[in-house]
Image (cartoon, rainbow, N blue to C red):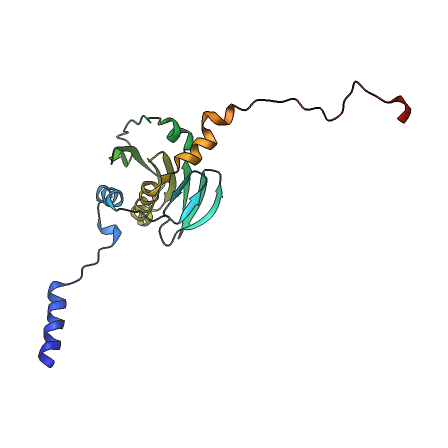
Length: 193
């Protein structure tokens, strides 16, 4: 019995379980990793779209297509551009070599970009992907986790074309105006006054 217990313990230690922290990866690897993870589950739903909010992130505020999230000391500002999605607008982005990271992103035929600037030991990041954008500012120790979380949120956004069509489509503007008068001003009864 002791031999079996020893053998099982030895096998576990030899094969090992390696856990890597997100900070052990390169930023480009984190971007690829976040884009390739398949997130079919959504836990936040809005008018025209839904997305997955990773565990540990709280929603602080949301209005229309804007949301503010918080993880530890980092605020994330999300903007979902339903009009650009509806019109299939193509964004233009030019890489800036003076920034810490400035590059285009393309995965599953969806374009985007990531742009990070360092100023006074604070990283300012802007990530655009899937017709939506997240901006945040953080210190170096939170940068990689924030990039991962942002791309995870942006890549999980799923649009509802039917709702977007009803919100933005041409059918909204095709209503016939009808003039309505509350009082008929042509017939004034002089006897009431």
